[in-house]
Length: 226
Image 1 (tube, helix red, strand yellow):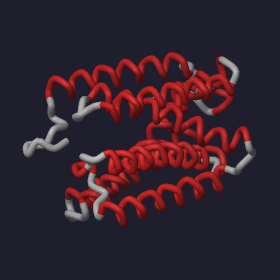
Image 2 (cartoon, one colour; image 1 turned 180 degrees about the vertical axis):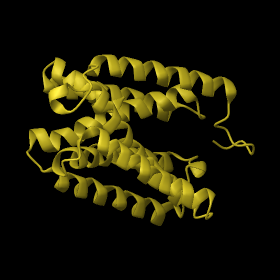
Image 3 (cartoon, helix red, strand yellow; image 1 turned 45 degrees about the vertical axis):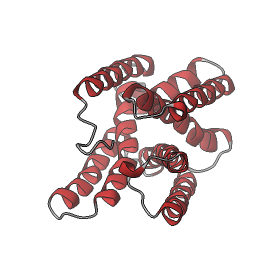
Image 4 (cartoon, one colour; image 1 turned 120 degrees about the horizontal axis):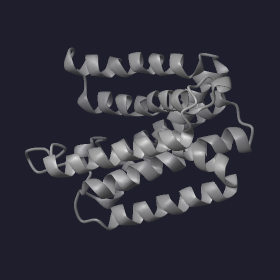
């Protein structure tokens, strides 16, 4: 959704205005999230959605606005994410999302999420354009990569936190690749359903899943932590 809606806004209105709208939306969502005294699905997923949109814009600004190659921006965001994880771990001694119950840990968390979306955007564009795989092949590549941490965790019982963050990083280029394949014109390698319609469909899906999550409460651990 972040990829589709970001591209839709940038191509529909003045890019600078689109980025400002994304920044304002992210700021409002973060204020709502940080003012919340406990985990509430709609606030959390609103913030994730706005991070997805603005994170995409941040990565696109480096390439389109400043002319930074996708490979360079991928390395930059990768190093940035690694630095966030290192400082987070050195400070808090854990990277588990189940341990986020202080403002400082939540700041680290959202910085990491922002970096993962920017990194994912740059990585997906790098495989599609720089490596010449196109959107569909890139999506299939990330499906395979996405399965690796799942196998390592469920079969080989490798570290839960490490496998979670690897999978989390890969969700972004995986989703973005298929989103671009559905939304962009055929001359760019897509199916031409339109970025606007793809954005709308994904927004409806996110809202529906957030409502389901709120009602089912299956994202809340039995010990009371989320």
